[in-house]
Each structure stands twice: as structure tokens, then as C-alpha cells.
Image 1 (cartoon, rainbow, N blue to C red):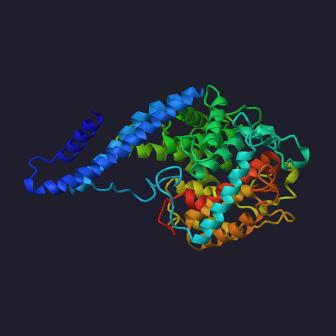
Image 2 (image 1 turned 90 degrees about the vertical axis):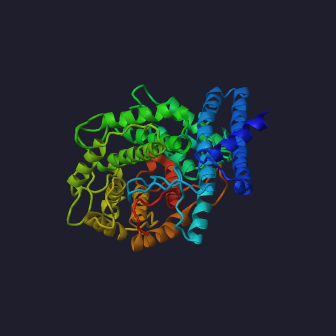
Image 3 (image 1 turned 30 degrees about the horizontal axis):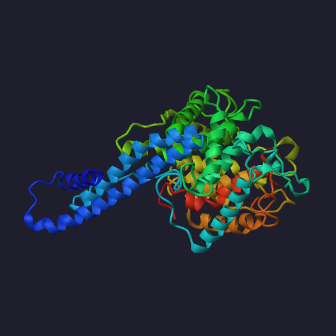
Length: 495
């Protein structure tokens, strides 16, 4: 009986909008029906697999995930039927035309988190980067805490989910517990950037699932992730928010929807009127660093919304367009129009440093805020091929590529992260030289000794923020640098 229903559906799809089929077309229609029936059979298998997944999760006590799996069956059916209808239309020679898009307006924020992977990578770069990413993810997975998060100060206590009782084999590079939520967000994004989700079948699906569950448990009623025990808690919130938004964008998980919405609501509530962000809710002052994280979050949410609107659905993650207007106003205020340098809290100020490390890590060896400003401008629609201020900023960054030299204060992983994102968007000779430095200076200094429960796959936290984020911070951040070419699409047509 079930087979009859599927066959009737096949005939209905093929004849839909095509009355009066001639007899001499019978053979062609039979071939078309076979193709559509094959597609429907594949959809049927996916639906049954999702139901089976829900059943298994329910029996093992993972009720939230089981409910999520059952709820997603309807979404999977709708998506599958759209694909089947498109196939039927194509077989009839009436496939719908592709929807045109304006450059920079509807391109994915994250090529891996949302539809499409970037293909413009050399074979050597891909192999080197993928190997580095695999090692980094293995290290991160080995040091995940049983509660699903990552502990900036306590990661060495864990080895593949079990206590690491051998103190002689514990890796060093401890950070501060105040930043557990932030480093958990970064580590989660590293897995998402490699295509691992809580709904996937890969070896890290459970790792991501537990991480997202942890983040949901540390979100308060206002939507803020983590405690507000330090004035920099907005960094924790931003990093956790970006992870949840990307995870929702990749999976459309109903369980994550409200979590992502509350996170965005808090971001928008925290913005200063007519301007940008800093520490706390509407603190009255602004800075480029926190603002860049918030722009990335809202940009990511906007891409999710555009994808839904294209499908005829409502935008699931409401974003106030005035937030981008305020961020642009702030960037214009702190950008030197003659040189393109972007300030931290005002025009002419360099990158921030912990007070005790100002002499060890000279500000003139970093263009972190300039790179952040470039990235913000591109993500908000400014074309790097036409923008003079972006061109000038890119020239400044090009003069300071990554150099791994612990002796002279050159190491600034925060700058390298934004610099890699920004220079990739700029493209051309600047990106070619920067990507070469990524391979020779960053990837080449990944630890390969011991094993994953020790150091293998990690990076030493030797930059200015290593004492805060620790080895989890440095490893997650540099892992995402290695993912840039596979994770992100270029917003504009740079090469």
C-alpha cells in the first residue's frame, strides 16, 4: 500500500501543470517517472532514518535531542519535496530560473556553516590546512570537560572524557576560568567550521552536541551567555552567540532557535543608541574589538534570515538594520582616512594589551583593529575593490604578516585571526602573501609531540591574550585560521 502511494505521488508530480500528455511521449515520461521515484525513495530513506534516530535517542534517555529529531522530520520532508518538485520541473524542461543576487548582499557569511564551500584553494594549501585542522580538533575533543564545555584553566584535567590523573602528562598553558564560556564558543566554532554538527554522523557529533547543550545551560533570562563577573563578559557572550547562530544556520535545529534569538536580542539590547558596543549593556562608550564580534554575530543571523526568505519563510532571527548603521558610524569615527588605520577606543589608539604585557607585546607590531575594521566594512557591504579606506588598511596589514617570534613580541593570534579573515576578503597579492605566512609561521608551529591528551594538535598560548584564554583559546583560534578558505565565501568577487 505504501509503495502505491509513492507511485501515485510520482505521477502527480510529473503531470502537475502539464495536462494533455501525448501518447508518443510515454517512453520519455516513464524514464522521468523512474528518476523522480528514485529521488522519492531516497527521501523516504532519509525520513525513516531521522525517525529511527529519534527512537534511539529516546531509548538512551536523550529526550531533548529525541524531540528535536522528531520535530525535524517535517522540515526534512518539506525540503525533500521541494527538491523532488524541482527535479520533476527540470525533467519537463521547465526548471525555475536561478534567483539573481547582488554582489555582497546575499552571499553566505560562512561557506561551511551555510550553503556552499569556497573552491578557490590550491591543493597544497588544502592538504596542509586540513591536516592541521584534523589535529587541532582531535586535541580539542580530547580536552572537552564532561559538562560539554571547555575549561580555560582546567582543560588539562581531562583526557577523552576521563580524569587525567597523571600530572606529569598534563599540558601547560592554563588560562582563566572567567573565560570558559568564551573559549567554549571558539572551540565549538572550530568543529562547526569543519562541518561537524550535533545532527551529523561524524565522529565529533556528540562533541558538538554536548558543547551546545552546555552553552544553553549557561544562558540567562536576558539571553546573555555566562556570568557577568568581569567587565569583559561581552566577549564571552559574543563568542558563544556566534557558535549557536552558526549551529542553527547549519541545522535549523528548533532546539537552538530560541537560544539564538535570545542571544541576538541581548546583543541588540546592549548596543549604545545610534552607535556600537563595548562592555555591558549600553555603557555609553564603544570599542572596535567588541563591536566586530557583534557585527559578525548579526551578519551571520542576517544570512540565515535571507536563506529563509528565499524559501518563502519568515526570517527566524530578527536583526535591527540600525545596528549596522551604528557600527558603520563608529568605524568612520575611529578610522584615519589618510592611512586607513582603525583605532580601538578612539582614532589613533592601537590594539589593547593587558597592562602587565604592554612592553612585552608592543602595539606597533599589531594591526588587529585595522583588520577588524576591514572585516566589518566588507561584511556590512563595502566593496574592498572600490573602498579607499579598506585598500589603505590592507596595505598596513600587509606590512605586518604573521611572524612566530616569541622573543620580540610579534605573536598576536587575535590580530592574525582578524587579519586572515580580512585579507582573504581583500584577496589579490595581499592574500597570497598573507596565506603563505599562515602556512610557514602559524601551521608550522603547531605542536606535533606527545599525543592529543598532551600537546599534539595544539598551539602554545604565547601571545598577549594567552594568559587569559590559555591553550584552548590559542588552539581554537588558530584552527579557525586554518579553516578560512574552506569556511568562508568571499563577499565580493576578489581573487
